[in-house]
Image 1 (spheres, one colour):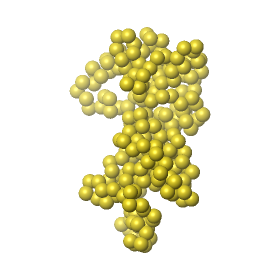
Image 2 (cartoon, helix red, strand yellow):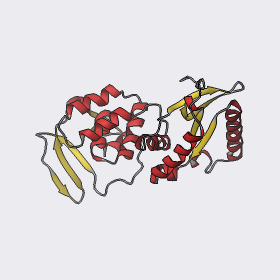
Image 3 (cartoon, helix red, strand yellow):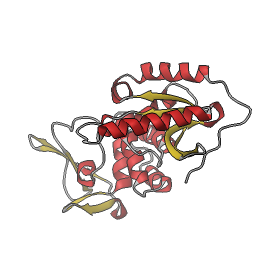
Image 4 (cartoon, one colour):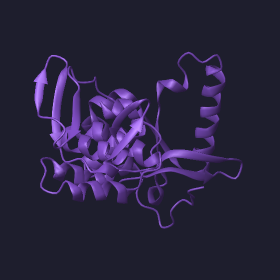
Length: 237
């Protein structure tokens, strides 16, 4: 429930019955057709108020999800929470509060791999394909100057001059200027290639549903682009 109240991204359907938390001493565990209620240790600074509802705060919500949800779902939430202003220290503090709780190992993994520079669930899932399959993990959303223009790329392996771009349908669907968007994208890719970069595109279907297959494609691109003596120059801003 907290993820929905806080407006955090979700890549899976919501559960059939919502789960509500209350501080210890304010209720007892129960299950009924409307949902589930759990009494848990809930520090005052882990509580928040958003969209007219009492809820757990972003950091606490992230760690609770990390302990109980699939890794991909949890990483999408963690990236979004960090991008919105929470810090790794905030997540670590909740993790330490929950020492010994079920699922803290999964939550610790999440804290170590979350990235505040990811800008969409697609980018998070693309990065996860590298992480899960032992591939070199690129940096996220960095700027490259082609000499004509500066472009921000989704993922970069600088030492291999290799760019990976998440190709989401939202760039085109229902847009009256879709033709211009496609033309701009082609010009962008042409300039990056002229600079000497290889550009690999990927989409939602594989990133969400078959990251092993996506990783095979990534690995093939990495093999085609050996490490160079001088990495491509890039910047965060």
